[in-house]
Amino acid sequence: MKHTSDAHLSEWLERQELAEAMIPLVGHLYRDHGIVTSIHGRSLVNQSAVDILKAHRFARQVDEVELDIHETLPLLQIVSALAPGSASIDLAGLLTSYRAAVGENASDAALEEYLRETLSSVIGDNWAPLGEPTDVVLYGFGRIGRLLARILIGYSGGDYGLRLRAVVVRRGSDNDLEKRASLLRRDSVHGPFDGTISVDHESNTIGANGVLIQVIYSDNPATIDYTAYGIKNAIVVDNTGRWRDEEGLSQHLKSTGVSRVVLTAPGKGSLKNIVHGINHNTIGEDPIITAASCTTNAITPVLKVLNDAYGIVHGHVETVHSFTNDQNLIDNFHKGDRRGRSAALNMVITETGAAKAVAKALPELEGKLTGNAIRVPTPDVSMAILNLTLEKETDKESVNSYLRDISLTSPLRKQIDYIDSPEVVSTDFVGSRKAGIVDGLATISNGKNLVLYVWYDNEFGYSCQVIRVLEEIGRVHPPAFPPLAG
Image (cartoon, rainbow, N blue to C red; front, side, top):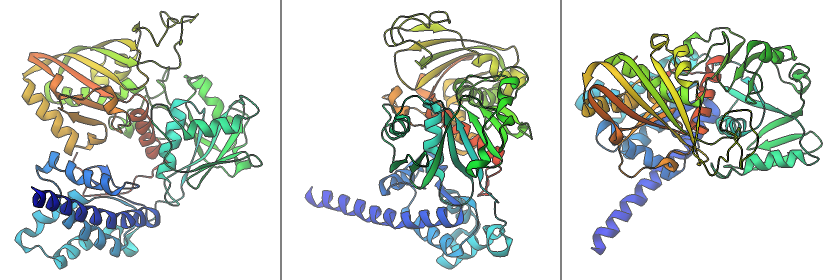
């Protein structure tokens, strides 16, 4: 037994050493070339050696075997030597396509030749830079604002993409700057900030992992001169929820240095509700758009693929939602029905517009869905229960297999995840970057009647969807290798 144990440990240490050798290569490609490396959509940027090994093991879900790090490291070394321009490179996908192309003729020389040809459009004179980075201003610095800041800071690796420049808040106290920095540094749900944070009172800035964030105090979105801080053509992300119609949000466009506005809530009137992965191609040049709600982002991708495959006659969406700041900690007056009762002590039935909002992104489901919500005493992670009547009959195994494949290999794999563990609970999904996670074991299927349970991190998962919308507006998406079909 001792020998077996030693051999197991020795193998682990060897693979860990190879993973450690990948870290500087991944970092170099990201910082100096704007290249995001991943394994089946799992980004390797800023990941530890153990995280990299976990990503290799995740490949079993797609290819039924663990990805061999002895193959991915040489591939990464060749990519680094080729020094391509901005791109999104999936190591597992490239290896699969390489094996299919060369068959039994695999060799180091063949791999280099294949990569040189495959990546030719972003190598040497063929590469066109993405252009200037896009300035982002966060108007409001609450739960969603701070998570957006964390994500944007984590993505800052070079002079491209989205660049967090400022946050706008109303001054809360004499030591406001320290309190804002502290809330960014520590989070009761999502844990400590991964990095260093400092404050500069003279310039009124927060420094976070090399990102200098200007803190601007204002209670009027129409009177700020962002250009005075070197900010231009900025996307303002309004995460206050204070204005939700075109008239209110248009105030941001009156400030100097603003080009576009994104609302992190469902919009009213004719404003487009964008669910990335579904209707982001309709953003166009609209100066104001909304990123819909966390629930709408969680359920719309799943509803789309179900409607594509089986057809949806009608359905009901019941949301079991964590409490939010809009509710009271203890019983007190609230203008909303039932929301005045203690959020920490009660399940609270309340309204949700998520079911109707789906139709803004998926017009084919107009009038087919109803919805309601129950707020529950948990701080984060919610669940949507989809009770659907389908046009075509199916069974649990078929629909689960379909959704699992969608989550692994389709263009919607950033939005839809799938899990079939019998032990998962809500806290297991804190920090999920997916819009929604289908719980396969809970699926109920009886002919044309289908009940699906979809988990979602209503804070972080939703924030990732907002970032994807910002990337579309900023046109900072590099070409992907290999491209996903669809």
